Image (cartoon, rainbow, N blue to C red; front, side, top):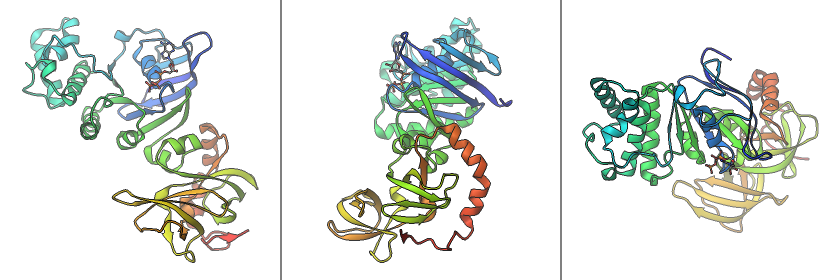
Length: 383
Ligand SMILES: Nc1ncnc2c1ncn2[C@@H]1O[C@H](COP(=O)(O)OP(=O)(O)OP(=O)(O)O)[C@@H](O)[C@H]1O
């Protein structure tokens, strides 16, 4: 643990009934002042993690530390943590000012101090001038901002946000993504944001935790997770991807779709069966002669910025391509990609095993990726 660690989970397990394990020995660290996102499908345990941090429940096993102190049994009102809920949980009978002031009145703060703090919080969320408005007179986005002001007026060290944008329409949602990110930068406090929307997570976060079935599958920056997913679940959940079965012939040489390809991956056993991932935007449609492989075009959709083309290779694998060039359904076309576009995933690898492999090969891999590859060529060759 470092000085910058604000929250640490150590083998935290949560069971609701005797045998329903909702979180299974989850361990992670959260650093002060960053924007974190918990991302995963419905029921994976995101809200449970927030409730444990907020102090609305205790772990069944394991330890939770806040600034280095064990807080398993510390009640919610004794933690420097505030939550913004999905439905905002505002008081409909109070105006905007009184909604924000509520917590401070409970603490019996003096009126002059309350006015100063509420005004400051409303300034942060751009709601100056709305103090006397009823909640029913506020739009969805404005209610959202009242809920945030009500949370930050308490000067928490951590702000928890449980799917706070899910009730908003797409345009407002995008605007609020910018606003929240900007607000976090200005406040400088730690935000822990829950969503099941991968685009939202990629756009907003410093760090993302991808969860599935009560386990953290992978944690890292948006680019780490997008470019180097450790397994099929993460690759599928974040963005669109082509995943086909393959084999590592040896380091830097993978085989898939009936051919061998130079790649930049290493740390696998010779002939190890693997899964190969290539993002659709890393594939280029070419003439059959110029491609690394051939596909027969099966369908094409115009998506505005690109064509979404799908087709099958000779081994029967389906490939999705985001291309600025058109193709003709039924034609055989070439697919071209760089060795760096190929990402090799080891079956069933955990995050800890993945990190260990990268650590052992990390710098070396980078250097090697730049150096002439065995045989000197980028082109594929038949095996
Ligand atoms: N009070 C409870 N009693 C029993 N089971 C619960 C309780 N609360 C949650 N669960 C179960 O725990 C699991 C994780 O729930 P949690 O709310 O943490 O998931 P989530 O990832 O936030 O999901 P969503 O995106 O749907 O909100 C789910 O299977 C849920 O049914």
